[in-house]
Structure formats: structure tokens, C-alpha cells
Image 1 (tube, rainbow, N blue to C red):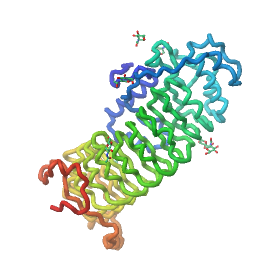
Image 2 (image 1 turned 90 degrees about the vertical axis):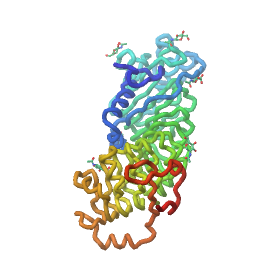
Image 3 (image 1 turned 180 degrees about the vertical axis):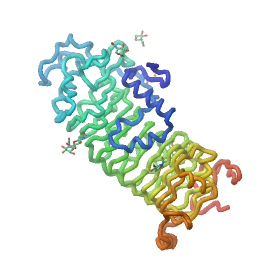
Image 4 (image 1 turned 180 degrees about the horizontal axis):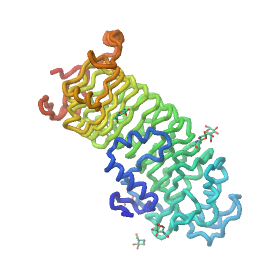
Length: 455
Ligand SMILES: *[C@@H]1O[C@H](CO)[C@@H](O)[C@H](O)[C@H]1NC(C)=O
Ligand SMILES: *[C@@H]1O[C@H](CO)[C@@H](O)[C@H](O)[C@H]1NC(C)=O
Ligand SMILES: *[C@@H]1O[C@H](CO)[C@@H](O)[C@H](O)[C@H]1NC(C)=O
Ligand SMILES: *[C@@H]1O[C@H](CO)[C@@H](O)[C@H](O)[C@H]1NC(C)=O
Ligand SMILES: *[C@@H]1O[C@H](CO)[C@@H](O)[C@H](O)[C@H]1NC(C)=O
Ligand SMILES: *[C@@H]1O[C@H](CO)[C@@H](O)[C@H](O)[C@H]1NC(C)=O
Ligand SMILES: *[C@@H]1O[C@H](CO)[C@@H](O)[C@H](O)[C@H]1NC(C)=O
């Protein structure tokens, strides 16, 4: 395989299976665009989401002491241990009792994978063997002659275990742990002492309780996937300060406001869909303009006015805030989203005119899908008409006179008579659009407050 031709992969994780994931993800992004990512992450159990390119510094020294093989093999009570000399090296000898102890805690194993976890060949997969399914070895950067377990991939194994503590945290050279579609629960282990660790996928498991604080200090993390669990409560603000490229928190029971620290995220893919979040989309979103590409807020209980600042996130390809209680007109700043392919605002409390500058993005930009059904818009801009005909724009169940499939007039009248739903209209266009006023870049940075800037 063209190893590293598409994506530079750190030495630590240059295992074929791992590289396949990374290269495929890169190819996927390049060939299929981004929209499939957005659809994929909210679909249950669809394997791990696209992995992201590791950019972390994995060449730092770790220098863990070499454990004595003899001492680490006694006292685990897990059947006949291989003799120390049967292992390829001391690192593998030390990992054997860790795996055996974990095996004893497993309460279901529908595919029978744990039956392969026996004997001294922990790196069987490296030599194309069939032992130790789910464990993948590599030469770590700081010990380039000592093959050891660098990634664990249990995706789809359906294993049940009450805890991962004492297991995942005991692999000193681990870079990835993937456990999509198992039945793990309990606390997330402290992985801060693993110098090469960068990818954690616990999606579609049985985790519950509050946000797992153990992940917050993981400075090197590039990929965090907690979707489809039963986590609840607030998401700590520090989560948005993680260096991750992908942060997937969808389909849990998280609630409370999305912290203002949201703007600190360096993530390219950020998904908080299908939770119970309340309050507004933070205005600090403007601060993500260098990195954010796809953001999914859909199906929460978000309210407030649609922030002008979203239009400043120049690289957005997918913006999805459907199925919330967000009010207001669409700010004209949305006309600056030149890379946007999909905007979903269906099922909110939006009103006014669908801006012409947004519909123009289908002509001058990349817009392919503008979903605005189930709102209270009363009219559409000139360029929107042809989008309705070509089904790029969906404005069903709004308040647009003369359009088919609209809300009853009484419902619309009642909505427009209710002053509590009203938001300021912000006419600023923070980019150069032909035929529209260009505002100096200065205006693009500050928060636009209230009603200022009427023109
Ligand atoms: C990687 O980390 C090591 C040790 O911390 C440091 O010496 C080196 O300069 C770093 N390399 C890069 C490219 O940041
Ligand atoms: C394992 O299989 C791959 C692909 O079939 C091959 O390229 C590689 O050389 C094999 N490795 C060993 C150690 O046999
Ligand atoms: C492995 O380590 C040795 C000694 O530290 C070094 O001389 C050698 O170049 C390294 N090999 C690779 C492939 O990094
Ligand atoms: C987890 O266990 C429950 C109850 O046994 C089962 O219904 C569910 O399918 C399991 N989930 C996975 C991903 O294996
Ligand atoms: C899921 O977790 C709960 C505790 O939160 C536990 O009682 C239950 O047995 C777990 N289900 C499975 C299938 O492991
Ligand atoms: C903007 O992002 C940087 C990190 O990229 C962060 O330090 C800063 O606090 C953020 N500011 C706001 C207002 O979000
Ligand atoms: C457009 O987006 C909406 C909302 O995400 C989705 O339901 C619909 O299927 C999409 N339409 C097309 C043609 O992709």
C-alpha cells in the first residue's frame, strides 16, 4: 500500500491496519466531500467516523522503566503463563497479564474474539497470524527494535465489560483505542501518561454518568468520539480547548448551555447533535474560522437568535442546526460562506425573508442543500426561486404566501404578533459580494451587538 503517500503517519503507528484507516479517511475527504461525514456520524454504529491525520509530536521520549518479566507474570491467576523467553520481548511479556486480567472481566463475547487471546504471540497480527484479534503492534519511536502493542481496535466486537480501567491505561505505547459498538461501561481510564496516545473512540457503548473528566487533560488527543452513549449533564468548558480535529459528542444526554469556550476549539469536525443542549449557539464561533469545517447542532433545544458570527467561519462546509428553537432572521453574513455545501436550519423559529445573498451561494459558491422547512419565513429572495424549483431549497411549512404546503395563515399571524420571538436584523456583510455593500474587515472581527449598523 502507498504508505504515507497521502498522509504522513508517525512511526509509532505505522501498522497496516492503522494506516488503512488514516489513508482511507483522507481519500474519503478528498473524493466524497464532507457531506457524507455529516450524515455518517449521526448514524448509529456505522463504524468509527473518519479518522483524522495525526499531527501530534509522537517522537518525544517516554522512557518507561523496563519491567521484569518474571515479576509481572506472577499472581494474575489467569491460567498457565507462557515462559518469559517465549515472548518476543519484555514489553509483550508485561502486557500478557494485563490482557488476561481484562479477559476475565468480559461478560459477553458474541464473536468469540477473546478465545484468540491466549499464548505468547501478542503481535500475531503483525505477522499475519490469527491470535490476539483486536491488538496491533508497531515499533515505538523511542524503542525502534522492540515490537509492542500500538493500537487496539475492538470495533464491532460486541464485548461487555464493566470497566476499561486497568486495561487501556496499561499499554505504555498505545496510540489508538477504538471500541465502537461494544458494551463497555464504567469510568474512562486516565491515559495522560501515555505519550503517543491520540485517538479515542468509545462510540456506541454503555457509558453513562457525567462527561468523562479523564479525557479533558489529554493534550495530544486528535480524535475523540463519545457518541451513542448515555452520558448526561454539562460538557466541561475545557473540552473545547482540546487539540482534537474531530470531537463527536452526539446522541448522548448532555444538557446545559454550550460553553462560550466553544470558540477555542481547533476541531475541523464538531458534532453535538441529538443531545439536550439549551441556550444560544455561542457567538465565539467566529474564533473557529481557521479550522471548523463541519458543525452539527441538530436536534437539541438551542434557542436565542441565530448569531451573525456564523458567517465569519469562512471554511464551513456543513452547518446544521435543524430541530432546535432558534429564532430570528438569517443574518446576511451567511452570504459569505463561500465553501458551504449544506445548511440545515429546518424546524426552528426563523422568520423574515430568506436572504438573496444566501441563495446566491448555489450559483457563486458550493451550496447544494438549503433546508429551511418548518420555520416562519414570509418570503424568499429573488435568486431563491430557482432553488426551490431545483429542490436545493426546501421552504415547505413556512408562511410564504402563494407557495404550496405552507402553514395556516392564523398560525403565521400569531407567530408574527408575538414580540418575544424577535431578534435584531443584522445587515452587515463581512465580505466582498458583487452588488452588495462591502464592509471593512474590521467589522468582521468584533461582535456585532444588538441593532447597530443599520444601513
Ligand atoms: C517533539 O518532542 C520532543 C521531546 O519533547 C522535542 O525535543 C522535539 O523538538 C519535538 N518536535 C517537534 C517537531 O515538535
Ligand atoms: C502480511 O501480509 C501482507 C499483505 O498480504 C504482506 O504485505 C506482508 O508482507 C505480510 N507480513 C508478514 C510478516 O508475513
Ligand atoms: C533505531 O535506533 C538506533 C539507535 O537508537 C538508530 O541508530 C537507528 O537509526 C534507529 N532506526 C530507525 C529506523 O529509526
Ligand atoms: C449491549 O447490550 C444490550 C443488552 O444486552 C444489547 O441490547 C445491545 O445490543 C448491546 N450493544 C452492543 C453494541 O453490542
Ligand atoms: C450497562 O451499564 C449498566 C450500568 O450503568 C449495567 O448495569 C449494565 O449491566 C450494562 N449493560 C451491559 C450489557 O453491559
Ligand atoms: C479563540 O481561540 C483561542 C485558541 O485558538 C483561545 O485561546 C481563545 O480563548 C479563543 N477566544 C474566544 C473568544 O473564544
Ligand atoms: C438536504 O438536507 C436535509 C437536512 O439535513 C436532508 O434531510 C435532505 O435529505 C437533504 N437533501 C438532499 C437532496 O440531500
